Image (cartoon, rainbow, N blue to C red; front, side):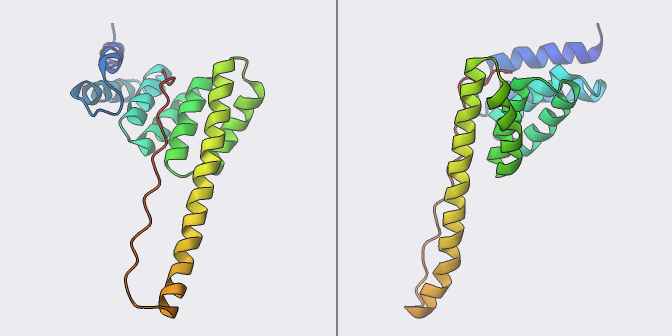
Length: 171
């Protein structure tokens, strides 16, 4: 048995035990093992997919994006990978790129759950993008309003809430 296969299955077992979003040690060990598997065998789609999932659930959307893009290159029709990649892109604020991925899933998915998840993510991405645009417009107007009134400091706008992680995400 090749070392990358051992690392993959070890990482997969640890990822199964890990609690998404908790930052537990199993997730960190799983990611390390999966990184090793990918390093030993570039183009190992299953390892890239699971590594992307691990990054996604541990709050590392940029790394998730990169791993999931690699997995999608190896398996272009994998709608679960497409959904996870779109989730990472939404978390990164790359809404147009996410919509490019999600549109075909909504239009072509035969699995009703995947189609529903794609519609939901499309809706959430549009809502988040609109909120960010409104916030940016309000921020742009704020200095003009401040100059016209008083020199007191305004509190910063609250941060955009993170995209909720779907319990249906399974690598």
